[in-house]
Image 1 (cartoon, chains in turn brown, cyan):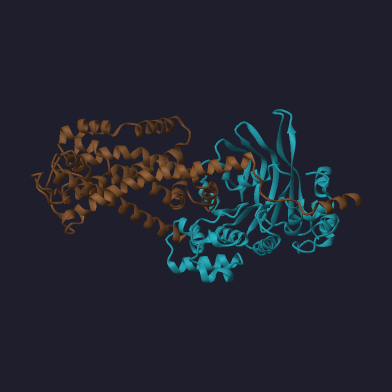
Image 2 (spheres, rainbow over the protein chains, first blue to last red):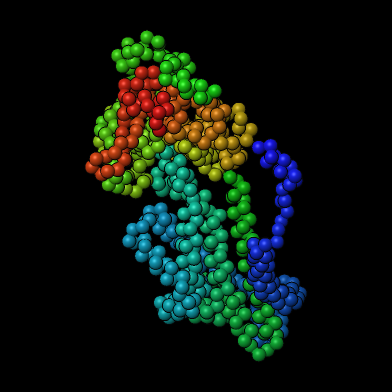
Length: 301
Length: 298
C-alpha cells in the first residue's frame, strides 16, 4: 500500500495532454470535409443571389418604382416598361393557389393523423399524396389544361389550380409531420378537462403545430411561385394588367422570365433579370411576413 | 430521515393527514363507528384489456366521497390503468377496453350513450408529468371553463381563474404574471397550475396519477398539503409509488400487485387489499401487502 503511494508520487501528475493519434487525424479530416461541404453548398447559393442582384438591380431599380408598376411593353426590343402585370399575376395565381391548397391540405392532414391513423383509407390517401408529390409540374399543367383550360379558357385561376395541385402534397406532408410532433400529453390534458376531440384539435393541437404548418406551407408557396411550366398551359400570356381572377389570359413573373430570357433582344433579357430579382424579392418578403407572424404567435405563449 | 420514517411506518399510527381516525378505530377499522361517507365509485369486477391482453383483473372496491384514496403497488400492477378507467381516458388508447361494472354515484361510466366528455368534466385528472398547455397561465386555467361551452363574461372567467389559482395555492406567486407563459414556471408550480386547471372545470373528483414523481421533496410537500386542503371539496384518488406519501395523505389505501395469469401466461394486475390506510400500514390483512410495505419486495 505504502509502496503504491510512493510510486504514484514518483510518477508525478497524470499526463492529460492531447495526443496525436489516428483518431485525431480522423477528426481533423472529417471536420475539414464538413467545412468543405458547407462551402460547396453555400457557394452556388451566393453565386445565384449575386448574379440576380447585380444584373437585376440595375433594371429593376432604375427610376424606382417604374419597373414594379409599369406595364410590359408590347414590342420586346424596346427598353423600359415594367413588370407590374406580372407581379400582380404572380400574387393572384400563388395567392389563389394558397387559398385552395393550404386549407385543404391542413384539413386533410388533420384527418390522416388525428382520425384516420392507420386505416386503409388514410394509407391509400397518404400513398397517393406521395405519388402526387412526384408528378412533374409540366404534367400537372397538362392535366389542368385538359380539365379546365380547354373548357374555360386561359385565366389566372387555371394557373392557381395547377399550382394548388403541386402544393397540396407538400402541405399535407408538412402538416402531418408537425401534428406528429405535438406531444400526446397535451391531447390527454385537454381530454381530461372534458374537451371533445374536435375542440382539442382546434384549440390545442393546431395552435401547437402552427409554426411548423406555416413554415411547411410557406415552402410550398415559395416553390409554387417560381413554377413556370404549368402556368404556360393554364395562364396564357398578357402584357397588360388583368385583375380578373377567372377571366382572360394573365401573366406571371416566371412566365415573363422565361419569355424574355429566351428573347434575342438585349432589352428583353434585361427585363428577364429584373423580373428574376422581383420574384426573389416577392418570395423573400412573403417568407419574412410569415416568419414575423409566427414569431408573434410564438411569443404570446 | 426518509429511511427512518419508512422503518417506522408500518407500526406507527398516523397523526398527520388523517385527523379523523381515532386510535380506537385502528384496531377495528372495518367496523368503524364513524358513519361512512357516500360512495363515489363502485367497482364491480372491473377488468381492463389492451387488445387481448388482460392488464387488470377483477377489481372490486368502493371509493368514498371527500376522502383521499391511494393506489400503491409495484410497477405494472395496473394502478394507473384502473385510475384511467375512472374518467374514460382509455377511450383514446386504441384497443383498450374496460369490462365489468364501474359506477360513478350510481351511474354506469361505460353505459350506453354516456359521453366521455361529460364524465371528464365531473372527474378531472392530473398527470404524472406536469403538462401545461403552451399558453399563458391565465389561458391554461381558463381553458376548461371556456371549453364547457356556457358563455362566460370576462369578469366571470377572471373570478374562476383567481379562485382556482387560490385553491391550488398558486395565486400569490403568479397574480402579477398571469399573461406570462406557463412553460416558464418551475415543475412544482406547473403541477399546481395543472391542479388549478383541473379544478377550474368544477369537477367532483380529482384523479392524480403520480402527481409528485417528477417533483422535488419541497414541491411534493406543497402538493400533499394542497391535497389535504382540497379533500373537503373534492374526492381525490391518487396513484403513487411512494408509500410514505400514501401513508401521509390518504384515508384509504388499495394495494395492487401483479400475478401470473394461468390462462395467458402473462402478468396481470390485481387488487390485493383495500382498507383504511391506518389498517393497511399497521396491520395488513394480506402477506403480500405486508411484504410490500415493509420493503421485502417491489
